[in-house]
Length: 465
Ligand code: GLC
Image 1 (cartoon, rainbow, N blue to C red):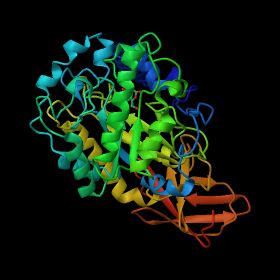
Image 2: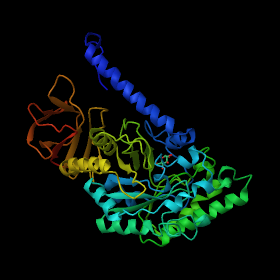
Image 3: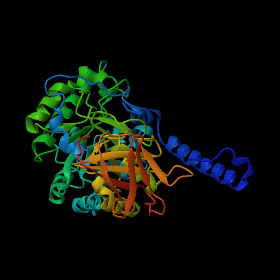
Image 4: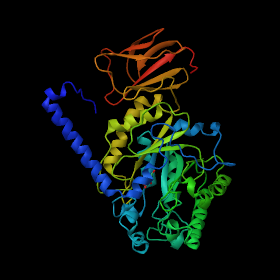
């Protein structure tokens, strides 16, 4: 929010609007906070690289713990993906932490599996939503912390999977087939954590039960890596033990180097996140926290939620505004990251219509502006928070203009060594650009700016940034 403090006392209307807005924000944050348990909040903040790299996750390293940079390039090119949280928790529709937050005993919670029989699940429809949004990859929660597996999983403890329970379907299979058909890169989320095991909460006191949990993890990860063709992204979540410490602290238990050596024996070039306790291939930044600061010189991913109430389907909907989504995307890409935006399909497997429409609007912006997003790298200009950021590709630089500074119609950029030949608004007209020893000035007087984020394309003579 941006108000001019000098004029505010004189402008009652403005003050009232600002107060009302603040109250509304506070009220919605309170609703979210009330629904979220403490451990859920902790989980959300784990290993976030807010404000730079100081919180980067430091997992265990060893042979195969991370891919060489050249094998990460394809992933860094994609920029925008769809996260899908779907499981039994879609039935109570109060978020994916329902079982833990509401202290529902495992035997009671298991009854949901008898009712989980979606009639309108259609993986092709999901893939189409992703494509229309301009997304390039998908990551599906094959199994979340509740323990219910969305595939034919013989390793599943107590047959807790969609193949053996009411649905009798292998949703993971349908999903991977649909992704490939639509030309989307295939990612799977898997939670080593499973709340059904008391040994998870007390691995030293109940080692036999904990061993069963570990056996399930190794068995299920192997099924996912072996039986579904090439999997390109493995997104672990919940490697910590008893919701305490970090994922890396729990490496003594999971032995993630061993686990992921098995993973890479089936999918040698799979991109792995750092939440198994192993270093992995990219860092994550999770949740609504604004993306600010300098370019991060590592592969990283912002994951966040279209419905800000919870990742899993929720009766309470708090849809992210379109402008904010586009701003998150450019702020992420301008700092070298990818963005993974989550949807929570309902218990019938249907992505809410409001989500579909919002994502289509993002897709419309990307049709016009995607050239400055996909396949780019950040820079050459360091981003200026709430003003602009930049990317480059070939001989072009793309400036993402978030907001014009007050009282001017010019944008000023720092000095670069390269000669700028011309400038235009992507999908629009040419604009005047001047370059001298003080930097670059782009004149936007009378130019038609995009109400979301404007992309300016600078053509340069050499293109070596
Ligand atoms: C948080 C949530 C978890 C969700 C994850 C996605 O850690 O607690 O439920 O799956 O974010 O990154």
